[in-house]
Image (cartoon, rainbow, N blue to C red; front, side, top):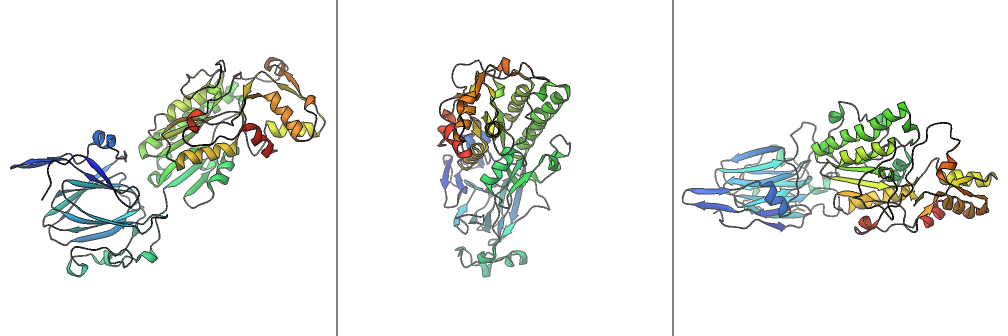
Length: 467
């Protein structure tokens, strides 16, 4: 019998992400009515916004019809329209809960959210039973499934009707035992800009597991109209965009302006559309150059954009585009140092060669090492931090470029007094080409990312380690 008058409520299970939901059913002598899927109410109650795209109905006319155990590469919202079923779920995903079993009965007053990779099986308990399920991907012949035998001794599912007495397809009877099951891998993570300084740091941070993919600029054309079909995007969970046009001064030229807008704005907008369409998490790297540097103190994440030059304008446009994706992290950073040509290595080289440099002393900020950015991105993803924009730079007291140069000289065994501080105007007075305007204050307020449990490394200590 269907239970009327329940309140919408969630019931946790031993399998992470597998959640039973009690559904309000309203009925009288004429029949009953329920809201099988009500996005606004259910999300408010804690159901993930899993983005269903297809609704299927399965009808079973005989008691005992048994199907499964199938683990699909999408999420499912399963309920019953008529009748009653016994459901069994087995976690077939890689990880510590592999093999965990949960069982319960489902009638019209109950539904269950089945995460990708959790095997599900159903046994009909009443004649003329129809169950309905919403899925967040269209069926595809290229989709990869994982299966488990209904009679597996390790899972030891207590079927209400013995399997010897029920209708089962030959295909389901041939599924492997748990010891022979190949676990379903996590959704893929794609790192763009894999050959850049941050891309290399992300490779060290995230490793080379099969579900982590790295793509250089030539491997994936973000401007291509075929981007939407370039991969089976529903197999992916996250895209980390570490690719960008970063030639700040060249961006002020005619060609540089076109290239900067193409990479930092147009291409990023394409990624945002892709992420929104496929329910992906998009991680995008932003810059202090979206601000004009006139603020006193550190810039919070919600400070208004006021870019001074073309590079900053394109980065601000990219940030705005990324915000369209419901699942996004904009990671805003400054004064980036990584594996490759950079300010620190230049100063160390000048010190070693006996050259006494003139270095800008009226711009204030903190160094950020690519290893820290990679660690911060990993932290946000691993902890399921709330989506949005996060400042991420080195911590500690702000410094000038001249201060950093002197620290490099000192820690490489040279006299820091050899560094002469000069104004930005004086430094660029004799520049041969265009010079982009720089923000004088690049200090970022780090309290938001710290509130997620991320421990910001001191920039000066990181510099010593880097050297």
